[in-house]
Structures are given as C-alpha cells and as structure tokens.
Length: 291
Image 1 (cartoon, rainbow, N blue to C red):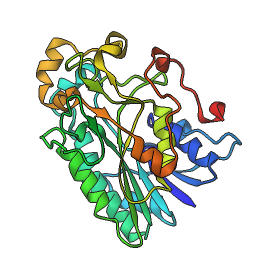
Image 2 (image 1 turned 90 degrees about the vertical axis):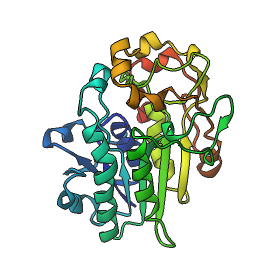
Image 3 (image 1 turned 180 degrees about the horizontal axis):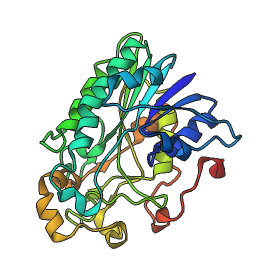
Image 4 (image 1 turned 60 degrees about the vertical axis):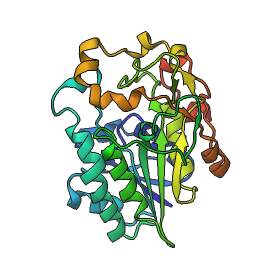
C-alpha cells in the first residue's frame, strides 16, 4: 500500500514517515522546499520514502504526490510560536492550509482515485466540557478561531463514500520530544482539563488511521488538569500576548477532558506516553528505538 504524506518534515511527519515504513507501507513524502527532503528520516531498516516537493496551496504540485497512492495523510501545519501568535497575519497561512489547502488536496485525491484520506485536526474544536468527559459526539464550538478546522474536517469527510474512507484525527496539544509547541498552553483555569499527545503517539495514530473506518476520532494521552502541568516549562504566554491573541487562544483555554477510548477500541492504538510527565520534553524517542 502506497501512502502520500503532506508535512513530512514537520514535528509529526518526521515521526510518521519511519512509523509507516516500519509498518511495511511505501511512503511518498511531500515537502514544501527541496532542502527539507534531508529532514525526512528513513525506516529502521534503512528503507527511504520517495520525496516530492509540493505545496497544498498549489493544486498542480499535488498531482505528482498523490498519483498511484492508495491513501493520503495531511499533516500540514503552520501555527505560530510564542509571541508570534499576536502578530497580525501570523495565522493566515495556517488558516489557508486548513481551508484552501485541504480543498486542493481532497480534489487531487479524488482525481487520482485515492481511496483514503486522513486529516490531522484538533480537539480544541470541541465546546468547553467542564468536568464531563468529551467523546466524539460532544458538541463543537465553531468560532472565528476554530472555523478553519471545521471547514477542513467537513471537506475531508465529504469525500467519504462506499469506496472511499475519510478519517479525522482530533489530536490533543502536541507536546514533547524535544520540540515544545506552547500555543495555548498555560492559559485557562488551573482546575480545567487539558488534552495532550506526544508526537511519537500522534505518529503511531497516523498508522492506525489507515485501518480505521470513516469517522472522527480523539487521539491523546490521559486528560489532566492544568494545575498538574508545569506550564513554566512548557511556555506560558505573557500577559500582552494573551490579550492580543485572545480570540485565537480562547479555544485552547477550554476545559476538555477528552477520551480516546473509541480510537483504541476501533484500531488497537494506545499511547506509549499515557500520562504527561516532564520527561516528555527530553530528546524524542524514535519509533525504531521503541521497537
């Protein structure tokens, strides 16, 4: 089975490629710039992915990526870091990746007769759940900040049919592996619930998604209260940043006691990093080392 993967040089992509190769898939790795091909790792046996330079905002460049593939995985992301979340226009490309970019990729997959599309989404799309458990049927809260996510999910799920599968992975905050991404962390009530996922586990979820039926699935470690997380280590946004980025950060402050039981029951996936620990922030543990 041949799998095309957008965002192969990113945090999750660099882990998903070797995970897919070690699971005996053939991988076509999409990178935005030629030099990023060097950042795409091989499998544990040295087997490499074929790299294609492409951009989801350039529809023509996607045709070489998806041609002959059985599945396509979209891990493209461009969220701003730290203080950049308050810079005007800093979210523009991320929004475009989730709207026009996903539209282009779905169109290319349809033209190439790709039978499965997997999308990286986020659990911040859910409405604040308070103390209750948040499962896949929980209501969503679409605001100007979460609308691009909702659009992306709809476009992918609309592709599903009797001969095509569409899988949406609602990941928790991707944290760890020596690459902390602090957008939204450190805000919200200390007693509210957080949903985190280690990038290694997110990569394994991509592999599991290739055997999942059409649907939306939560993916993450055990939920925990914000007071349990060392937000000083993870990166707490400053007061000015929180004020300027208030609209964008609001979804990340929601109390989300998210359960991933449905994905586990359906695919057998389970997080290697089951519960948050400061050790997550150490050097990332490769799929090969875990094997």
